[in-house]
Length: 381
Image 1 (cartoon, one colour):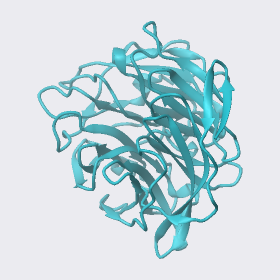
Image 2 (spheres, helix red, strand yellow; image 1 turned 30 degrees about the vertical axis):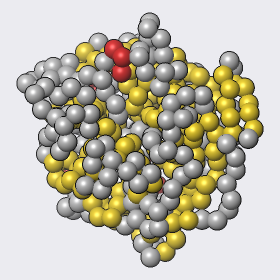
Image 3 (cartoon, one colour; image 1 turned 60 degrees about the horizontal axis):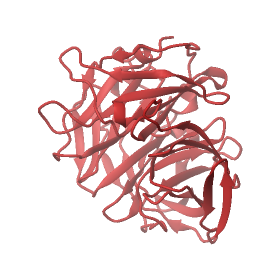
């Protein structure tokens, strides 16, 4: 096991994998569709959805949701993480795919109506990549969504029908990472076009898996990289244009690493958790709003003060400010948010400039759910 010091912290490399591919049970949603504006949760929206975003010096302190989803099926701490699939032919019929960490996967329409619930296990983080990214199964482009199954300690795979927006299981032979499955996110290399899944654990371990088509409509994976930080991690997101991997060490802050498999284990701590902020209590969900020309914003859930910290995507990720999602239009605000997702894509009349989706840890009078905020209210353009 190699050890490297980065700043005042120590990263431990947990070893290199062998070269034998295995079939993944990646909780991925695969959609047979041609080309898409694309979006993803922990890894933000796909670069093809980028639009001009204003270079903000400040952001609104409070924004109200305009839509909330039906509650998740289980009570207590159940709703966890959302991801956004953008329908390329009819954006208004896009969907939010979400996890119930007490029992399964959910699909909602853009009005918050539950379209499907699959009781497939304790599902945690979820992420998506569009067909335009070039991942294919049996020669056909698919949209890939990945989530960790904590019940089986595996990653799992589904396909999403773009017409019915229903999931079906297309998992191959199970893959069991050499860690306790917790957070996860996807990365498409701008250099090679290859698709990777990052998975992490409560012990701070991180593994990177290359995903591939192994035939018969199944997804295969090969472990290509592993490293570790000092304490519990979960939220992660990648920048598919700039080749970066952001990781939330919950009680410490946000790390930025290279996302390519040969990037090593050296990272930079770009924001810290402290009582003074910008991250209070612990950092949870991470997502990216892509703008044109490398601009855009990294958004993080600051769970201890019920806020969301906004950092610039470019340069040294300078802090812009924090905002809260507050009650309005008969919908309550959000508290203790876990996962968040964003897309800058046009999603039709309700969300013409994109949407921010946030898990609500204290949905008034009901089980937890997810709130939708028009993106122009968060990031005025």
